[in-house]
Image 1 (cartoon, one colour):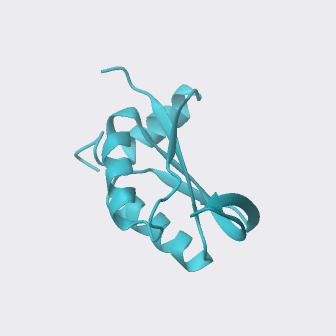
Image 2 (cartoon, helix red, strand yellow):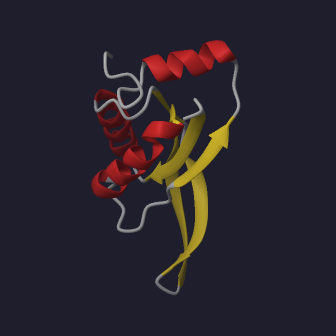
Image 3 (cartoon, helix red, strand yellow):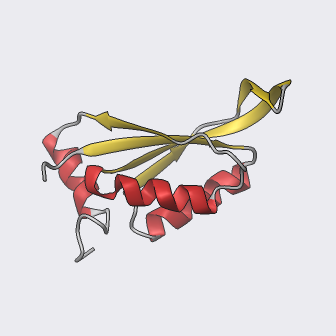
Length: 111
């Protein structure tokens, strides 16, 4: 399988939720890095009503090989009933690609 990087995007309501998801997914070896942004505003329709909420946005860096497991883990542990989970392939330098593979357990069992 070709080595590659994926970025998984999600959002949470509180900083504590974001920090917990970030710590746990990295400790599980499903991602090498998670960046959490300062809160922003999300506007969306939920159950027929227009909503506007503060949310923290997470950028989860993982390997292509681990992305399906990371998404399954997020679905199980995310605090939202219907979480935003978007996964995109990304291009990066060979050095950063290597770092992500070394630090994602599903791609490197010796981690």
